[in-house]
Amino acid sequence: MNAVQQAASESLPTPRTVLSSVANDTPLTRVSLAFVEHRTNLYLRFGHPLRELRLDRWRRSAIFTPAAVFCRVRWESNDYGTTRWQLMILQACSPLDDIQRIAGIRPGARLLLRAEGEQHVQSVLPQIDAIETLGIDPAAVSPAYWRTLGNRLTARLPLPVYTAERHAAYLAGEVLR
Image (tube, rainbow, N blue to C red; front, side, top):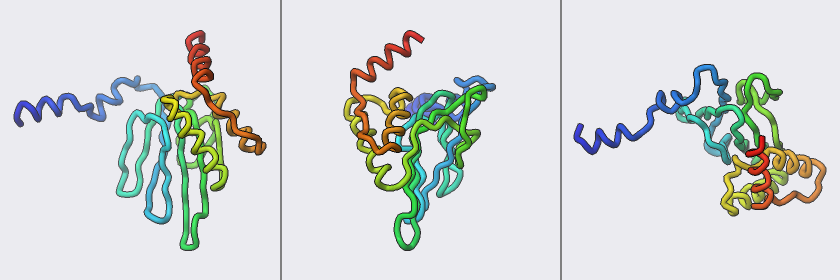
């Protein structure tokens, strides 16, 4: 191995160094993801997993630390067309938090927003895009906003817009905690 290859290999984090920053007793949330062409696509729309594990050609798992916010999208179809659209914005929890059991997420997570059906999912995706357009990471958005968005979606009311001012107020509140 020449000096360039050795320097490059030393700068890349290995799976052990990535997880070494997390204490051994820290509970992690494992999210199952899958892709089978023309049948199913279970993927993360946003979120920052601590690590991703590739299980085989079709399946992977994303691992999150407590309090991490992420969005999982599920799309399924059969020979006749789309059968399921689902979008969930979740927050990974610690063992002492109230969690919900959700298929494909172990041990569970706090459900902030759930959109079922193509129309509902297609109405939430532009909200996420608008947040990214503001230069804000959707994973850093206030959990209260995601809950409000989900409640408005369920009640069929106009969806609230997330602004830079709202985000600044949320960050100021987090500093005071």
